[in-house]
Length: 221
Ligand code: PRP
Image (cartoon, rainbow, N blue to C red):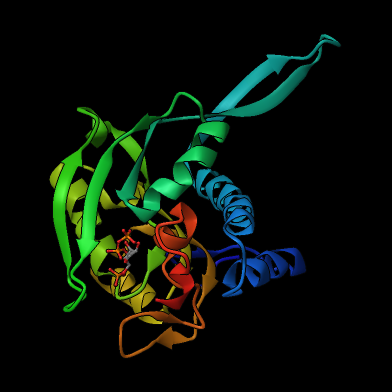
């Protein structure tokens, strides 16, 4: 599953490829897009939480015997990068109902593709927490690096940041690895490349548009 010291690619099973086949199809209905995207997001969140620290814990089973188990050893929070990152919140709350959630709003300029921070609101004690940074698309990595900077300015150590990402470009992964080498990234696919418009190919279109139904065909962007 590991493809570089900071990148954790989900096992590329036939089932995962079949789900990607549905959601990458430009003619996929919104209902199918949301359903299968959420199934992949669940796998990504589980893989992200596998990277958190655990300590030993023993419990007594109903048979009166000892089970030598583990429990999560740190405080956790999640920070979706609005807007597309919010697509991951539903599954997150299913697997971790009480989790604290901060928000960062970053948008790429339509022409320059450079990210701009509009808003942030994070838990007061975020510096003591591990952070699941929810950012489905890693293209040039500008947005992801801007979000990581916001977390670092709030006192979060790089090695406490786990980015939960749906689709990544080789260029974007390299850039994060170079500039923020201790941030870990869980992804379900690594694309061939970025095109001249800074979109990933073969790609998935505009994830936020397709998930939230903003346009009739976010895929055509
Ligand atoms: C998209 C996407 C990522 C970003 C990735 O956001 O959701 O946040 O671009 O590109 P990058 O790696 O080159 O920065 P966009 O600004 O289009 O906003 P959205 O979340 O509303 O779709």
